[in-house]
Length: 122
Image (cartoon, rainbow, N blue to C red; front, top):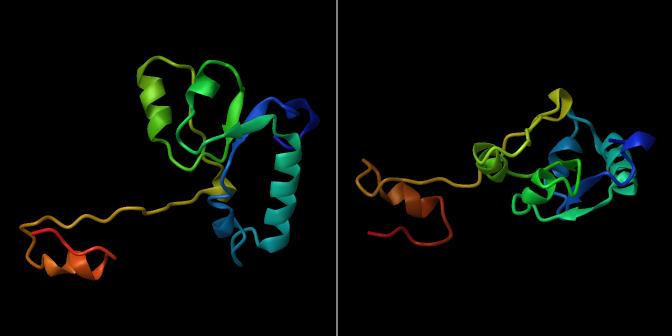
């Protein structure tokens, strides 16, 4: 997507989500990540809200979305028959954990309140 053939054909997300992980020492590092983001943003044709507008790729408004932050909507559009696919780059694979749930009948239900800013429901 950094090559001239991709100029203005793909969208990028409006957030810089995920790039902080790539910029870490031992992954890509600061300089490589910032160079990539600069070149990627210069080639992008538009912005898409993270995980919320996959239909803009599915309907061919854009050829691709670079660096989507969730895959849920891609899976939904695939189930509808849309020609979309998620590709995870080998040198930029990331795993994020956003939610932790503790069942109300857990052995230690108070664990939920110690992991959250909001009190556990009873």
